[in-house]
Image (cartoon, rainbow over all chains, first blue to last red; front, top):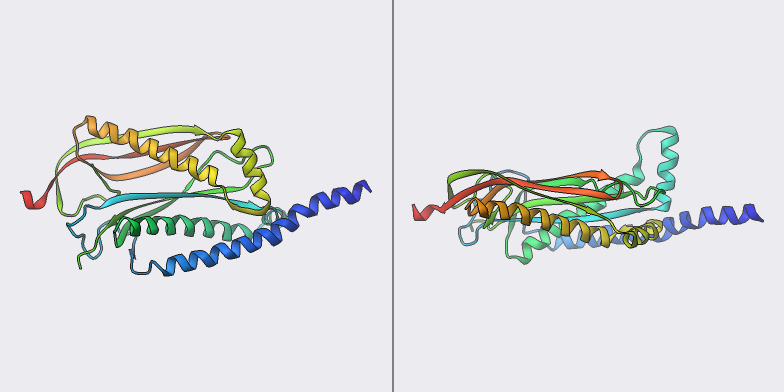
Amino acid sequence: MDLLINIALFLTPIGLGLFIGGRREKNHFQSLALRRAALQDILISDIRTFPGGSSLSAPPKMLTSQVVIATDYFKSFLAGLSKLFGGEIRSYESLLTRAREEAITRLIEEAHVEGYDAICNLRVDTADIGGGAGSKGVVTVGIMATATAYRRIQ
Amino acid sequence: MIVVNTETVPGYRITETLGIVQGNTVRAKHVGRDIMASLKNVVGGELKGYTDLLTESRREALQRMLNQAQQLGSNAVVNVRFSTSAVTAGAAELYAYGTAVKVVEETAI
C-alpha cells in the first residue's frame, strides 16, 4: 500500500507536467507566433549601427525586457534520465527557446507601443538569478533582452 | 537623457566623453515567491514574481547609473550593457554600465 502511494506521489506531478505543462507550452508557442506575425513590419537586427537610418523625429531609446520561466516536472524527469546517459537534453531546449522568444516579443511589442518601427543592437542574456528555489533545485530560466528602438527614415 | 545601447546616437554628435558610469543592485527572492515558484514548477510556465523582481532590479540599477551620469553633467549614456551574477543561492546582482557623454543635435552645429 505504501509503495502504491509512493508511486502515485511520484507519477502525479509527472503526469500533470506532461499534460498540463505540455498543453500550456503548445499554447504559448502558438500565441507567440500570432503576436510576432502582428509585428512583422518592425525591423529587428543585432547590428550595432542603425540599419535603414534613424529618423530625427524621435531620438532612439533603449528598451529592456525580461522573463523568468520554470520547467515542468515531466521535463525535469526527462532531463534526469538524459543525465544518466549524457547527450542532448531536448526537453530543456524548448524551455530556453520559449523564454527567449517571449522576451524578444515583449521587447518588440514595447517598441511598437512607443511608436518605433525598428530595433537594433539586440542583445539577449541569460540572467543568473541565484540558483534554484529551495533544495529541490527548481529549474528556472531568466532571460533579459536589451535593444535600441528607433524610427526608420521613410 | 538619451539612453542607448549603441555606440552612437543618430542625429546627434558626441562632443565630450565623460567616462564610465555604473549602477548595481543585489536583490533576494522572498520566501512567498519561492513557494509559488515551486508550485508552478509542477506544470511549468512563467514565474511572474521572478520576472517582476528582475524588472525592478533592472530599473533600479539603471536608475543608479543615470544618477551618476547626471552628476557628471552628461545628457546621454551610450553603449549600455547589463550583466548579472549570482552572489549566493537566492540572491542575484544586476549591474548596469555605460559611457556618459555630452551630445548636441547635429543640426545645431
